[in-house]
Length: 308
Image 1 (spheres, rainbow, N blue to C red):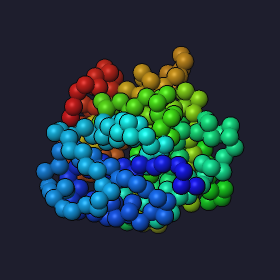
Image 2: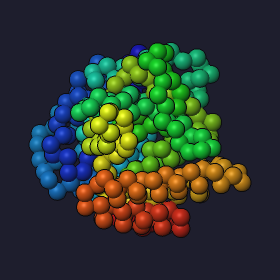
Image 3: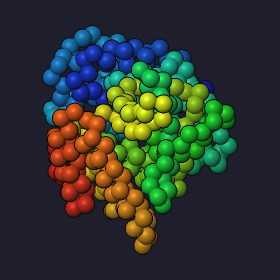
Image 4: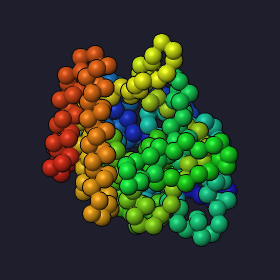
């Protein structure tokens, strides 16, 4: 089983409170991990001011490349150093001890034909505070759909998965190419999943492999009798900008929709509904609303070179 050579990878930015737990969780993996690559995006809070285990290799960036740029650098390192797979976690994530072992076993259980067409496996992300399960997604003519599969079978197919807990086969990465660093943050992982799909590759989530992940505050407004009315993930203005810029850019310029405007229309309606919810239920909503509008403008105009 341990003939599959795996690089564990973490990207950090001002992660001093969480990086220790992430590295410790990777060191506890039951599958042998020869090296943990830590790419730091110019932290200023002392993230790297500590002793790390000998197997940790550190690359310090002079400026913040965002998640997409750091992941691309991590994949490039893995390719150059002869690894077969790369396991990606955010600094605020902690994979359970058998997370990587279960993913390797999942891949080895596939038929030879399916192995050759599989480029990504994913751990099931579980929120550290609420226990909320973040499943993989599929692309549909009406937009992206987050799946809600039963616990069994543990493996299910999906088009895209968040960076944290993703397990990429590097031979396939050579074919697909590296993630575009211009996406920086939100939706870079979704778009990269789509890049693999349109090249004929398959991806799966294995629910027996779990990564504990901090997804951010989840605020829900309920009626007194308990019916859910509104659910909002707490996104900062910066993340809101990149979320809407990148997602709108994707549906206009990247998604193969033929002549149908439906995915764009649906996503723009979701944008409007998001703005209404932010205006009504987020305190001091002005900066977030303005960031969303800037993201909308830059996404429609295809200006990925712009930064928040």
